[in-house]
Length: 318
Image (cartoon, one colour):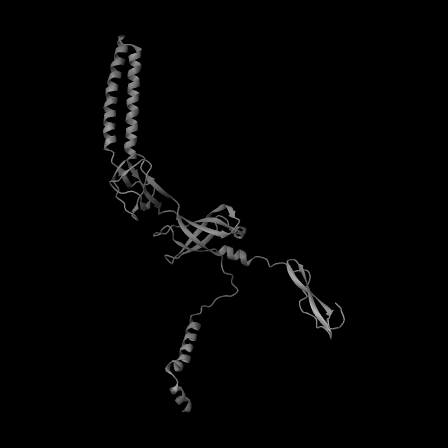
């Protein structure tokens, strides 16, 4: 009764503190996962997704942008129209060149007929042939210019950024659209250079993406040609076995290598030193003191104890 009355006189915070501590301890003990302390953790490294194909599309002819159906982030298929330049001027020039070609062809036919009848001369025939060839070249050049007015997608992808807007006049080679491939991604990693002892093209790994929380199977495709001497790392590129849908450039995650864990676990233990270590110091006698003299053998420092006479007096022995 006295204990209960004493507990009742305590503040509420102090009375409930032991109970809360007990509940928290039980909760932590129940959630603690069972781990095998002897199993080696598989090697892991951070990874980044980068598009295998990306491009900045530009107009090869100067003019005003007439059509741009896609906005930032929109997807497109291969050979879809990305943008088109207003090429009515080039179309008019093409029509003119075709008329000139037709006229030159008629003159060529007349000169050929005169030469067949023996009333023409070779100079007029040569000039008519040259006029036809020149007009045909103008037609081919303007027809190609009209084809360049429409820029189509080279692969399946998405628009990253509009660098120009519809109805804007652009110069030749001026950037208009930045696009990225969404069907092929590279898994880029910087791995420690000692991993080259077991890492090679074809080694599989598991990629856990932070943004989606999902795991995907992938394999090493290429290994860089140069090791960074400062960080002792090398660039490695992997590829998904099956490219999942919904990936976005810049996603990151962690790559886990099971084969590397096996290689690490199977590594032989370091060789033992042929000389047994002398660690324990001997007990000095009266008037003596034990002093170590360090010896380095095989990269390991060991003390070689010596018994010396105490400055206050005594003997000296090994």
